[in-house]
Length: 436
Image 1 (tube, rainbow, N blue to C red):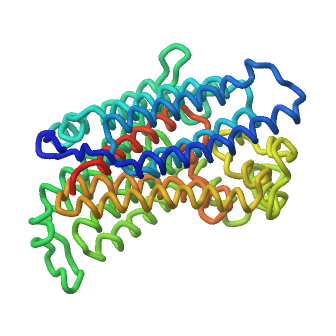
Image 2: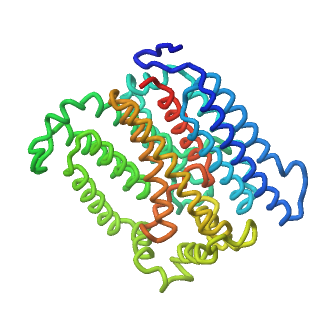
């Protein structure tokens, strides 16, 4: 049986294989998390029932999420939800290990995030609203950005640290996390609407010497937003993330190599200007090029990260057996380094594989919706968002690219980051359940 939702049609038929695959993967994930939570308790010689609340919330979220998805989206992709839950559960273990006072907050955010994911995945009109009211959402996103510039704060209370959050009492929210989803949806809608003109209007497409104003206009808009973020918030990572995603989406829509070349040149130009203008960017570039002369000073964080990777070896030191807490802010920006030290190369490969699976399944959804340009571009954009953000932070802590300060999706501490990641998951689940 099928039923129509505006212009989209949801498959609503029994798919026992889907539920069986998802349930099996969730059981495997649950067993892995249980063993590691138990290992952490053994190391700390603490067996209070209250200390298992984090694992209990994860189990409740996994079971309720699977049941509701089976009820409303039986034809969804069976891999997306369990892989995301596996990573988020692993993140809970890491935060409980590295910064126990923050574990309770992350657990609450996990419950909120899974609830938001279910609302986005199940609610039938959300995709239509993203397309129909794209300018309204874009305006809201820009207002949030301006609000952060004017009223921004930092949870640490430091005035010298980047003021990238909006605070409401004890709750802090990073608007850039919402803005990245809004921008992907806006660009997918805009490019889908302009798709015929973009394809046919690429001037000199055979030589790749010029592009049409229809393509140049959004480039200038995105460039302006990224420069605004870079100048006023000194947030190089978010600016690079936004513009990279845009350039890749525009490349998918236009097929022009000039888009990629122009995007890379603009990113390099912005980086050079930022290097000259902002000390924080200069610091990150300097310690990326050669951190060792300042291993006990400005480059202490990245050097300790590299030592953590080296100490991990093939199989790691074991949970709570390493010393990743020598790395400042390890539970947020450098959670991947802590994972590498205590779970080793095997853990690193597992995380990279899980991120790769999420991206690959997202791209598969895009291919399934290739006849609907908005849905296809939305799936591509969301998948690239996960891939690019993961690469920036994993490459940053390994000194493959300069540090950007973005979070590792599903694993790093941060409520707004976790919420945004699960909203992305909800959208991908919804798209995967639509009729081809």
